[in-house]
Image (tube, rainbow, N blue to C red):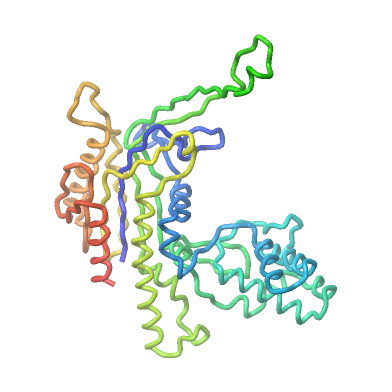
Length: 398
């Protein structure tokens, strides 16, 4: 099962995702410059949102980090080992961040890794076992991280969390298995031509008049911040079957799967978790935004249109081409605005693609804050109704 999610979200002046110069990210699309929010920025905002985290308290969440050595040191101390032993274990753990097992001296792994709680505990268990087998600290120091990574009990399959099953991971270390992402997220693009703007600002020294008797009454500092405002088209595609496969893993006796019934039970449990993950993802995608410059702009606007398409066939379709011709607003008109025109462009494009290609869908849900209708879609008067309707479709076709 494949779920395509399309959103139109209009943000007030903001700089949600900036480049190396501090400018809002952009790109050329349809021959004109558009405002852009990178897929990485969108995914992180969703993954780290409180809404997403609350949904997985029992299942747990993974962390993207280079701080594995610090985690291992804390676990060793919690288990009653001395500071010196814990420090050596942390140094060994730093070598788990690369295929060569090269230990680092800065207390971090060489690469950022997306690790589950069970991954971190597995590394701690391996290091504790190695220390106990070594017999003393001196012998423990001689054991290389490269050798520890090759241990069978570390390389064995471990259950992963729902967020790893969804977002996937790639780690160049033998200690952790790669996971193919079950979601694709496009860079968000403005439906219209981008306009860069600048905010010139000053910061005033509150105590200047008390301690500075000179004639200088100027600001303590001056500067400028780039920003833009844009209506973004966002597109995400979730492979539910792929997520279930990630959660289940290889159905072998090594993982406790010794009968057809036990395998089916595991798949059923994974399918239920995948459904919950999809619903949590949709909520987080709707109510979260990238954090860039939010203390300055507070651009917390919700989407004005959400289209959900559920398919049995693996045919993801983005409707970005609805905006190849950038949306333009007649400044003299009082009956149409940028959001309304963007929604109308999306609806028109969807209907044309439907007529020309007839990509089969098992369910199409449409929610908007405006009055636009979409032929062949179930109209959802509220976001909560959209969630309920999606839940029904997922349960009926799982």
